[in-house]
Image: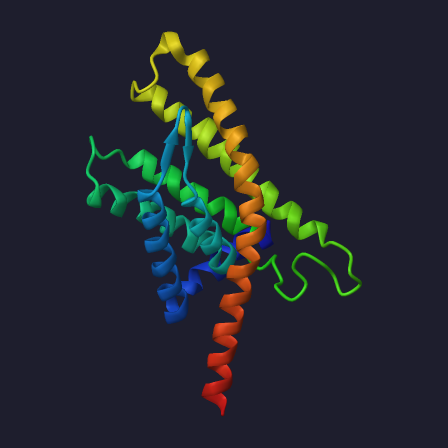
Length: 206
């Protein structure tokens, strides 16, 4: 329990660091940019904006990622004000970031990511990424967003069963692309972040 709470307090300290704020702002902007290029293919919506939020959670923890997720939803509505603004969806977007922060923050090591020094696959880190995405899909996409859509009347009561089945199939299909992308992109983001700022520290010292 102590470790769970400390992850929030340590993550909150990221708000005092300029590099954390600037990197988060960049990733939030990237998430919104990716969102604009989402493609609808039948019932499937190809959208990888969540990867930027996952990266924020991995780098800066649950507190920062929760705030970033909400910011993406709020700013996205300001830029594209379609329909009414519903704060509950902003909270759901924040919970998405929260999940990645809780599971990935300070749990990923880029030097050993993907394989250990002995050449064996680092299964634990891979499982963490897969678990984070599965929880995001199950908790946010299938449970919270479905409940909100039903509550606000976007899913008629008589069509709830069919809508739920469609959403489950849709998310299962999308997972086939989402998980491999996370496994490829998150290590690259972590490696780039560590190298850029370690280089800055070396320059400051010299």
